[in-house]
Length: 364
Image 1: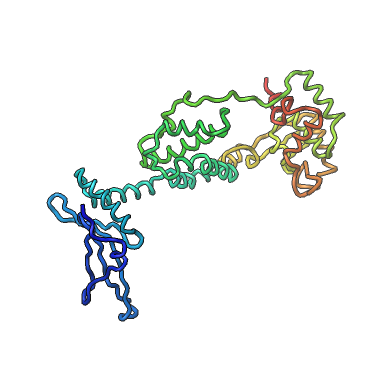
Image 2 (image 1 turned 135 degrees about the vertical axis):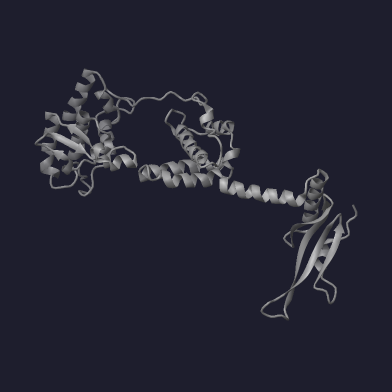
């Protein structure tokens, strides 16, 4: 095909005198349309606008394809696109219809992308869990899923792709990072299926054994009578640290609560006359709905030794909100990590005993 234009001709092109527009043909149906544009505020002022167009015939009809604006698209750019459109035409594809299909697909993907549907799912999900859990989980998806699937339409994402991507994520124990990301991706797809953005959830198609997990190591604990006796002796005779933290560790071995639940104990929850401690659902590890239901309050019946610990604490913190008020700030409780540090000061390593592992002592 013989080309008629060059870069200089394109740059200098303008309509002939007394004409508002003119076409400058390059060959093969490609031409440059040049228009005079009059300033609506000052009719004496005008400027040139140049557009690349492709005139062709399809199914016996003359059609026009708008390629783009010059100088945004140079002569070489316009020719490259022109050749691509001619190739489509040679395959029996109408370039104008192909362009409409491409734009429709881009709109569909934009409205159907994994990231967009994740945001829609999250609007409902965040009302079912605590604020901290909601923030943590949306961050997991932003970090571990959006980089691979964020811009993809959900109905184009296949089970094998998800499996391969999960294999790149560290935290391979059951319940670890990879497992959490898999569950969250699955929840987003459940939302997508429910609202008919796709027909099936690819995560559910993976099956139970598709992902290989590293065996989970349980929290280090003590369970034999001799171990418990040695621990209790150390707590009573060898533990240093603040008065509040020492008593918190003692109580941990008697009530088996999570460190965060125990450290945040308030005097309003304690009834020493009935030897009872009622932990409100708002402080327990529950969903947002669970925390809002007072039927989920947990009642702990206190042993004689536990009652004595509270009685020892009352003269020190009884005029405060928190049973284990922080020595650094009496308006706040000690941090849960104080219990872990107390265990370390007793000589127990992380492989010997953890604060969470103390709960295993209560198991039969």
